[in-house]
Image (cartoon, rainbow, N blue to C red; front, side, top):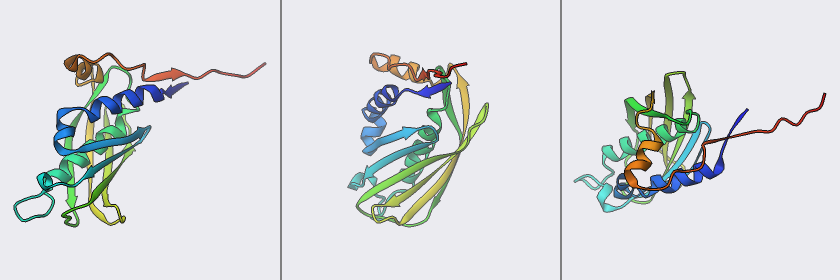
Amino acid sequence: MRKLNPKHVDAIITLINRSPYFELLSMVILDMGIGYSLVEVDLENKHLNPFGGIHGGVYASIIDTAAYWAIYCELDENVGLVSLDLKVNNLAPIKSGKLIINGRRIKFGRIISLAEAVVTSEEGKILAQGTSTLMQTSGLQTIKEAISLTGEKPPPSKFIEEECNFSL
């Protein structure tokens, strides 16, 4: 039986958090695993629209991110994901503070998966919610491809085999 390798997850989180887009938006993945992800953003002036509230595109980016990484850990080793659609509900404005984004798998399919993300304030107020439909892509947009572009060393294997300890 396959078990997610925590060393792989740690290496991927480190790599992702150093990526240009994540640095641009000051997004940080704190955790991810089978069926979930946790992302944080400390709001800065760069996240605000001309009227002083969070830009709707920020909600879209962080929801898309949390949904994607909530599915990632279930994918086979050399399979990537492409977002087919993204539905975002802007529920409340915010001007400052920390955003906490919880991604959750709704359905992991053979080709198509569905995930959602909920954005809350530190106080727990729901600010936005959205869903993303994602398509598995064999050999396309894989972690292996991303790493080859960065020149980083490959992460440990994604899965480890669990030992069967039973006697007859």
